[in-house]
Structure formats: C-alpha cells, structure tokens
Image 1: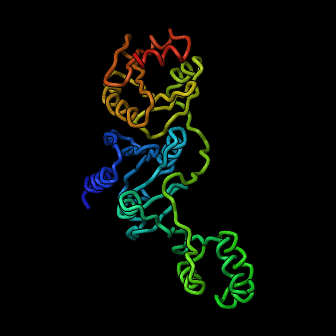
Image 2: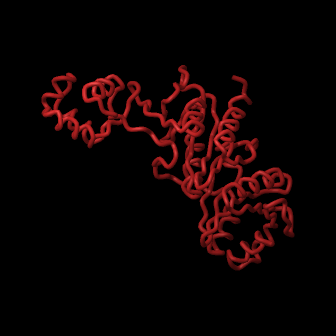
Image 3: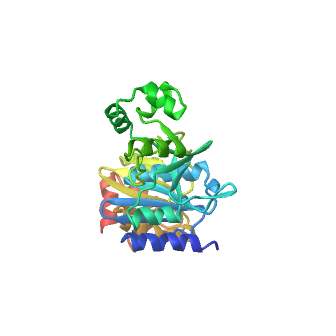
Length: 304
C-alpha cells in the first residue's frame, strides 16, 4: 500500500461512519495523524503501516492527549513485525490498541466489535467468567469434570471463570460444549490505557513557568504538533511555541484540532510582540504573555 493510501482509507472509514474529521497532521514530528469526533465519542488516530514503528514517545503523547481530552487513542496499521495485521484482532503497542483498517471499518462502520487480541504466544480471547460458571453449574459439571474435558487443570478453569483469557481453540470448544456465547467482545472506544509515567523535561521552560504562574496546569508533549496542553479551570489550551516562521505553520492545524475537540489553541511567539488571531488560534508574543496576571485574561483573549 502506498504511503498515502492508508491514511486516506482511515479518513474514508471515519467519514463513512459519520465522524467529523480534523485536518491531517503533516507536521513532523507527529504523535497522531488525525482526530475524529461523533457525538460524545472522540478518537485520536495514529496511522503507521508498521505498528512497531510507533515509539514510546509517540504512545506517551497519544495516551496523555487522550486522557485530558477524554478521547480514545488508536493505532491503525498494516503489519506487526513480518506479519499482516489480522481482521478482527486487536494488537497492543505500549498499552494502546492497534488494529487493521478492516477492523476499524468493522467496528465504526458496521458496529462489529473484535473479539480476539494478540499476545506473546498467539491469539487469545477473554471469557465471560460469570456466564461460564453459570452454564457449567447448570450442566452439573464440576471444575474437575470440565478440566478433564478440556485437558487442563482445575485451577485453569477457575481462572477462566475469573475472566482470564484463553486460546481461540479452547474458547470454541467451550462455546460448542455449552452452546453459549462465552467470548467477550473488545470495545475499542473507552478502553483503559496505562497510567502515563516519566513526564518529559521541558525545552520551553520559561513559557511553561509563565503559564503556571498564571494558574495553569501544564502537560508537556514529546511528539505532538503542539508542545503542551495547558489546563485552566475547565478549559484546555493546545499550546505551541517558537518563532513566527515555525508557529504559523502550526497555527491553522491546531486551530482546526481545537474546533474538533472543543478546546482552545494558542501559539506563543518568540519574535513577535503583539497579538493576533489566525482562524481560531491566538498568536501572542512571549513578552506580551509576561504581562498577563491570570489565566482568565488569556482565555478572554482567545475568545475575542
């Protein structure tokens, strides 16, 4: 598949599923490629043909942005190592879900949830433990009876009933034995991501210190098109920083992203002493920022 075809396919799928789509992020480095929104569902998507190319820094950004925007991070690709991603299978990269474009289509356009996840050693499914216990007891089978039937230990059956995953083969045999839908589906929206650790050191400390002085909570990014998320009261500001030449390229993009995500956008400019708007994005000189006393002043300027 050509380098541009996969991102275009992802965009087409999300549009087909009636999502609003942000502009594609073509600025490097980038931890995500686009953001999609439908109702209360917000999805941040990283497109990577080879999902192993998604680094720890990219995953860290995706996870952090998703947490503070109440969004779901997804990686869409074609291959993992030397194998193609299988349809209906969810892969894990640094604790984030990765999947093929076909699985993305099935879930968002057709409403078909995947059931299989990849883990070291093969493909697995999660068993509905309570239902397994119910149908086993209804069939008057003991833990030992079922263990003997499957050729596993009683302890393993007990773990299945506590929700432990198992192989596809075992899951199929269980469903055939009890004629019951025992496999849990995997919901791509709202899944639990790992707690972010080791925040990056700031390379634009003076600006961040200024924003913190104004009462803002700052979360620095590693690979995103904006350098930080600035939180004030109930507001989130996508914040970029740099020279005019650098930030003007980002202003339109982060302004578009802010519209999709219902946030604010700001670029702090090192070689500019005034303020102006580019679309929805506030451009403010670093020296001008120094004169502000409170985050509410900045919010008012963005809202003008």
